[in-house]
Length: 265
Image (tube, rainbow, N blue to C red; front, side, top):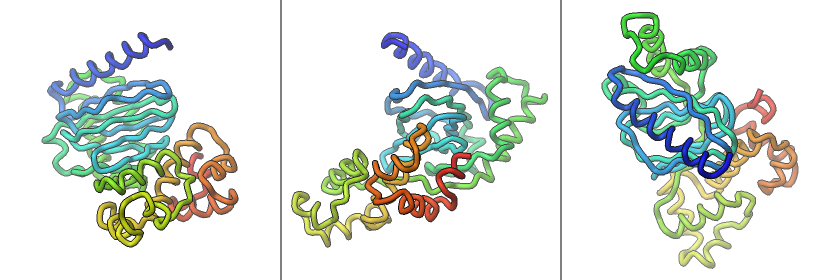
């Protein structure tokens, strides 16, 4: 797809999403596909959004962090929250937008959630409905079941909190770009203008995680992106700085409960 076509597709998606915000229905759904390398601009919308990909991987960024969305997971974005979405792979995105009055009992913070087989099929059916569906008919009942399913979503630990301190931000940006970097806080302290002890304390204060845990989480999220794009386990382990595939698999299983192969089954 050439440049002008990509821009037109992006603008079509923006216009469609904007139009859906005013539809007089508690829940509306739409399908939008994005090519690898595309990203949305920073934006917000009045309705809360469930950002779900039936294929590919996405990264949703807010001012407080990054949420990585592999297949069969989704990100819940509360209404009014500024965010952007990056698409490192081709993505078939399916979104639900929930009106504020219907979202009162739903999460008020961003989170990655697991999409159950039932909810997956409900979303697939919902995107084929007209925007102004009959609320008293089968379509309205389908959307009511979707709301019930949204209230019992299981959250997944796929969030990378972002520090605000400028010194930590510089470190975080370098590690996010290259998670394989193995420098410790003593090494970062030489150029950060703060002692290793100060940096360690600030990491916990601003992210709720130690520096080592934060770096491991950054590696985990990058691994999900690479694996979802089809890269093998061995290559992924080496790209992330692990000495062996077994060490990487052990980290992955500890974080997510299953091996990389089973996670993407």
